[in-house]
Amino acid sequence: MAISSDPRLMGKERSYVAALELRIEKLEKRLAFARSRKASVNLHDIDEATAAPPDRKDSLANIRAAIHRKAARKREDSDINALVSDFGFLTVNATTRDFEPSMSNMTFARLVLAAATMEEVPDPTEDSFPARAEALATIQYYTANIFALLPCFSETHLLAVLDDVYQPDERVKERLKESDYWLLYMVLAIGYTAQSRNKDDEYYRRGLDFVARALPFADKALMPGYPTQIQSLILFTQFSMLDPAHFDSWYLIGFASRAVVDLGFHQDPPLLQVPDKAALDLRRRMFYCVYALDRTISMVQTRAFSFTDDSVNVEYPSPGSSPSGPITGPQSADPALLLFQLRRTQSEWYQSLFQPDSTPLPDASSFIWQMCLEMREWHENLPDNLAPGIRELFELELRYSYIYCLVPSDRSPHLTDYARKLIFEHAIVYINTMHGVAHSHANTSFYTSLDALKLYFIAMQFFTVFNAARELLISEQRIIPPITRPGTAPPPPLPHRPIGGDDSLDRSMRSLQQVLETLDKFSQRWTIASSFKSSFETISSELLSNSNTSSNTTSTSSSSSSNIINNHRCLPYPPRHSHTPNINRIRLIPILRHPWPLRR
Image (cartoon, rainbow, N blue to C red; front, side, top):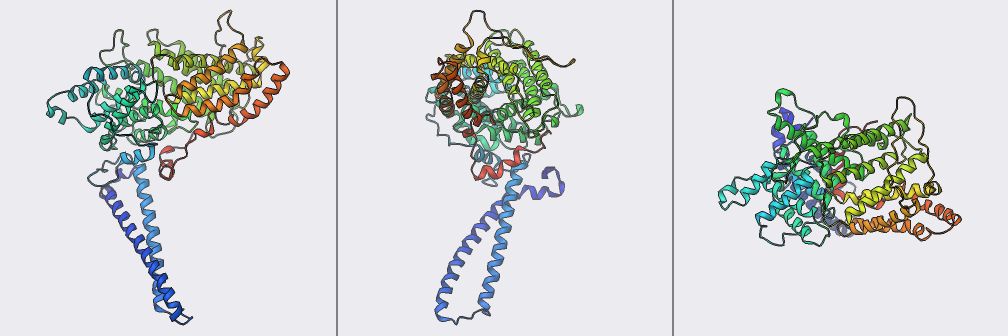
């Protein structure tokens, strides 16, 4: 229970930040006093060592000094404990609205920035604002490619803020709130950065400029206790996914998840408390945006979710009508609804297969086939008028989910030949499609740095199954699907292959090369992709160099390569990506990430 809900502690809650500052000052004074006293006592002891007799056990001064030292240690321990507890309260209680800059230098926004900032954002390089037509075009790009998937605010409100900012009358701008400026600047930052193809291009520079413009409004935009805090954190998380060099998306989505739960958005309100249908739909969309981002970020980084599905009781938002013409007004949330549905299915099998419980499932194959069936039915029901870029993104997500679900785990340790073939075929299609996305002239959907991690994961699983069953996979012989029990879902069919195409060996070698080319292209935007490219290049170089050798040589290569792969099978991503948080993150963030027990 949050402390702010206890009426007996209301007064104490409102002043605890001021008390925290006072304790810090007192602690600093006592530490300075203790250091000076220690120095003077040591000097006094040296002087007296030559003048005083050896036996000073009964010296009243020494007894008094020992008492003072003991009391000082107790006060220091007490102050440190109180300080840590106050920081813990600030981290946990995300509904308190008393963190005002006028009261204290500590605000919730500054806590968020201290935890999530990887590198300081440079100051804006220019003071001029873009022309209104350019800003509107950037917003339209955002709404078509990102807002369509993550509609966490009212687009009508965003356009109204844009109009007010460009009004010559300063009195109109004075009506805008800090959260309005944060909304506009972060949407422009995300819109520009999402169009970037290189971390040195103009789009990326413009994106950083608008983030720098937004940060001065962080204190009010991220203030706890308001729905605007959730919206602001969602936008912050979106930008961090595009720019991992400056902000860490995992910490930001942790804060957003905690805010959602503390405000009760993970539960639908009683019908009597619903003001109107539009407000309820916006509340639900905000929750599912956090839910979708938490699931995808946690899965990509092989971490536990911020909250389990058992704690959630929120209906999907109402579907809207899909636009048939150019983007001129508020966009439909239908693509978002489809994404939310896929994330719920992904969340179910991820929690069942990869959460801490290591006991094997009694019938793991049936569970996996059922999950694959549900995802295949989701894909078959995609509307025909879905935007091509979003459809392509959904198909990549589907193949990524198939492979992730089939990967061996503690709860499903066995991999059949048919499952290997499924991973092999889906990985080839995924790698080929992502290669085209990376080398296209424009970003047609919301692709982020997480896609570099996904590609590395797919490439590693492809390489693993290829080395484990190379002869089987390149022989072109038909693999019989496993027999299932009556009443259970059948295994998914193999992906369709065009007649007369390349053989499996040529397709495999081309896929390995495409992985390196795609990671090289991604490294122009995200530095982390360079380490993935180097890692995979080392692992696959032997296979690529010996692709035309005899079967005996191939067997030897397979055996030596498997030794390398064994180091990568426990985690789908390279260990070097694991964050090494500083002291602040170690002490503060664990309170946020696991407020509920994981599903067993």
